[in-house]
Image 1 (spheres, rainbow, N blue to C red):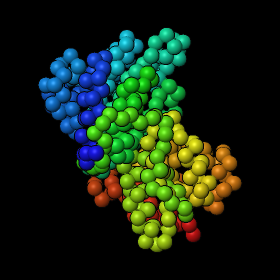
Image 2: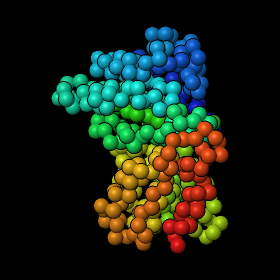
Image 3: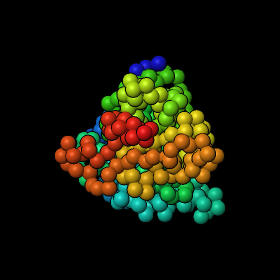
Length: 325
């Protein structure tokens, strides 16, 4: 086991898959010479050459379209957007082409492509570079959406995404890149669509993903000092969603909080709450399922205000305490 950063885990997955399959290539803005906006692909151009590490013009719609065509032709492109906010420049290509081509053509083609992009707030990048749009793509049939929270999960799920025959949105929170965790030296691939119980507990369940998952674990430690034993479930994959693990934990504790950075309104938390309410777990609940997401406003530039509009460890702690009253 190596103790490496989230960034290193992502880079390792990309490098291993490119060595394993010469049909895998990467394209995006400044990912070659510059090494990527956050340095994930630093050194890749020298290692794999410009035929497989392609710097593109500033046109997400343009190079996403190229990637879709390449995927349909038998390649496995990995597209990188500098910031997840820039998906707005390629929405038609993602939602009407990448997500639907395999179905509309009766399975005659596959679209094995991955869109990697840094998401979320916390870097002072303001309203147009700090958003969390994952719920949009969960609403599109034909897309898979992955948001891992640890280096181990990031590497294993990214390898699975690259090998998948469908279009996958792979979100990497900016503030996770420097976090560390143990990652096996030997090759491994994690199943898409399987949640992970990161902390066992009996009094309340906190369900989350990505950076907010780490905050949920911090909140669970704070709750432990008050004698409250919190279980923490990491969704890891938002679609397909692991209803079995969600329902089992809800039945176990009877109290559930779903926390995420994306805007609470019409967010992932609403779907998770519905999964519980529509299942046998509903009859095991002692309280209604509580959602705790981002505020219904653009992300402010001010660091102090930025921190107030998304869940933090202390506000998750306070919300759980309120839920248990």
